[in-house]
Image (tube, rainbow, N blue to C red; front, side, top):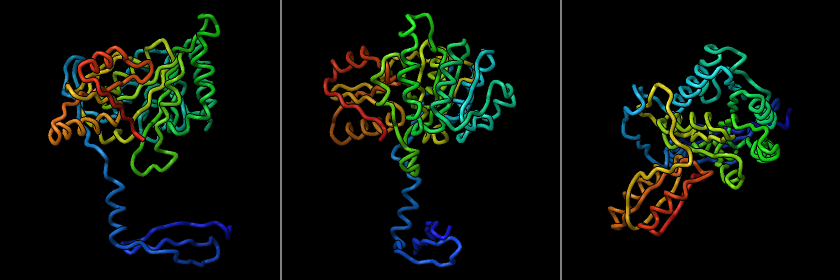
Length: 326
């Protein structure tokens, strides 16, 4: 125990120290200047974009102000209410999950339909494949997208190929895997990753990433209803930062259908998730400072992506660039 160390930073003239447990000794390694310390405090909570809500819509009925995690909860609530075979499972989902996306659902629908699993991503996805194959609507949560890699084999070698290897006799198309995705600003290396590129080269699954609460609910409900296993990555920096009017009732937004958010004639910008808001700001800056007209496309579904929309748009604005969160 004496070898154990505790790192901490204190005050404006902060000292980084190591304390040996049980020894009572403490040694200063270096000091941060007051300016450096204040910059660190300021930068930690500075986002690299400003969230821009979608225009309010009454197309899907009455709306309510929701942030992104509340829109996810609403989608899951709609699904459990309308589909008696639907089950939600993952680490800590029974008490609401670390981001509160499943809060209240176990109390409302029972412990047999919303339940915790062991801390084993491979087991979570493997169980989901089996449940979906048996006829359940299986909604699995991986607590952070960074930890999805132990389940990689189950996703790309089992879920994605189940229909193909059985000659279409069996499938696990009722499986949806949710995971918080992307950077927050202080999540460090194991809580900031965007792993979609590992999956978008694998036929048999769909990969979806929304940009807003309105989009998140409609796209998640489409994933749950789709007859293919889906990966649904949720930008966790938007869980509370993104707020807009979201329909209360169930609705769907088509998968594999990109959306042109801004028309332009010189350059086409293609992105998904959080980076959409960055590119909208970039497009405005390019127009104001350089006179460059930029088209902005939200891909929404990364696999299979909407080649028709992108190719049609780029015929008018041939230079294309893409961006995602790193």
